[in-house]
Each structure stands twice: as C-alpha cells, then as structure tokens.
Length: 250
Ligand SMILES: Cc1cc2nc3c(=O)[nH]c(=O)nc-3n(C[C@H](O)[C@H](O)[C@H](O)COP(=O)(O)OP(=O)(O)OC[C@H]3O[C@@H](n4cnc5c(N)ncnc54)[C@H](O)[C@@H]3O)c2cc1C
Ligand code: FES
Image (cartoon, rainbow, N blue to C red):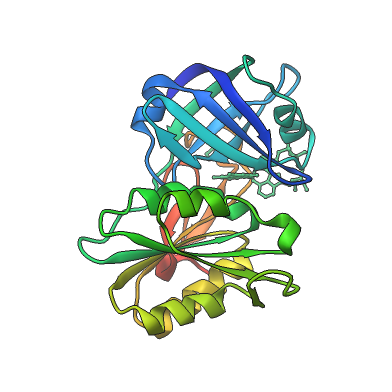
C-alpha cells in the first residue's frame, strides 16, 4: 500500500557531473520497499506532477534514490540538502520477483544502474552484476556493489573503462561462465533492454525488464504511462514497471 511521507534528507551527494544521490529518512515507506519499485517525489511547489525515481537502496528506515538532473523537476531535486524535507509517495509499482533457486544477474545501463543495487542485495540466491556506461566519467555505484559483495563487470561505449562495447556482451559472458544464474533482471534504455533480453533468450534464461514511460499520477489513475505488453495496454506505474521481457511488444 503506497504511503505519502514527508521524508528528511539525511545525506545529499553529487556522484558525477549530473547524477545525484539522496539518502532519506522514510520510516515505514523504506521498510516496505521492494527491489524494482519506485517512489514519486514532489519536485518543488510549482510542479503539479511528481517525478518517478527508482528505489536504489533501502535499509531500516532509510531509502536511497540516485537520479540524473535532466529537466526542471530533477534539477530542483539536485539542489536539496541535508535537513531539507521531501514529499514522497511510495513504494509504487510491481518490482522484481526472484526465482526460487539460483543466482540473479542484474544488468543496468547508465541511470538504469541504481535500482539494480537493491535488486542484487536482496537476491536470496546471490547476485552478479553487469553495468554499462557512456564512459568512465559516467560510472556510478561501483563501490556500493563492491561493499555488497556483488561481483561487477563493466562495459563502456568508448572503451575508457571495462569492456569496449555494450552490456549484452557481458550478459553472454556471464551466462556462458556461470550456469547457476537462473534469471536476468535489467533496467536501462529500451534498446539496451531489448539486446539484454535477446542475449538471455539465447541461453534460455528468463529475463525481467523495468520499462520507463513518462508518468502522471503514478498510481494507475491517469493512463499517461500506458505501454503495450502482450498485445494489451498496461499501466507501467501499477502493472510494472517490471515486466517479463517475453511479454513486452518490442
Ligand atoms: C518507473 C521510473 C523510474 C525511474 N527511475 C529513475 C531513477 O532512478 N533515476 C533517474 O535519474 N531517473 C529515473 N526515471 C526518469 C525520471 O523520472 C525523469 O528523468 C524525470 O521525471 C524527469 O523530470 P524533470 O522534471 O527533471 O524533466 P522534464 O522537464 O519533465 O523532462 C526533461 C527531459 O527528460 C525526459 N523525460 C522526462 N520523463 C522521462 C521519463 N519518465 N523517462 C525518460 N525520459 C524522461 C524528457 O523527455 C526531457 O527530455 C524513472 C522513470 C520512471 C518511469
Ligand atoms: S502514471 Fe497515471 S496511470 Fe500510470
């Protein structure tokens, strides 16, 4: 059940030129958070719509979000400081369901990496990660994966760090090396999700993807976030954002 909480900012950090991290005191909202879910944050008095941001981490009463300052809303969010208060609605949406046995391969591209941290940390059978970035300067959260004992392979578009190329090559590498991986969870740009799904399918491993659509209400009431899944329009905010990749109309 989503809750509307006034959350105090405990820590505000800048991770790269345009990516920011906020640690929030979120009480019951943080305790209820599940991997793949998101929160809808009111970004300033002037903005009628809240902005959806994935849950990057949740421990006890604290919740972490990591976001790119893109437009008016996220730029306002990037200016919040320790002690400020935020109006947060969540946890929202249907997140990742873990397989009964085996390890999970979590795959993130760019600003799709943050939700994969919690997805990896909560995996009952353990997790490995593959993350892709534009270049070395865009890398985020690598130390957090390390601290959580989640092995990480990195890819970059220009070869300045890790594998030179796209992250689906790393998915093939992992699935060749490690036969205990029983599911792939991915979040990132749509072309990346499609190529990760194609790679997982080659190995017969189920793949679940987090779809991104522009949102209004975030709770299934306004139809702004409609997306075609299995030939039917579904609400990304309520039925997703995580869907079985097999059912998505790519
Ligand atoms: C379920 C979900 C989870 C998300 N999680 C994160 C996250 O963890 N970190 C993060 O940085 N971003 C995340 N996003 C994207 C984030 O919500 C948008 O970047 C944000 O709403 C932009 O708001 P704005 O006011 O800053 O920009 P606007 O002024 O509204 O738009 C600025 C630019 O961003 C583009 N944009 C706006 N909304 C979206 C969207 N939903 N998807 C793609 N592009 C968009 C616009 O086309 C425009 O080019 C998520 C989106 C969804 C739907
Ligand atoms: S955002 Fe309103 S229905 Fe999904």
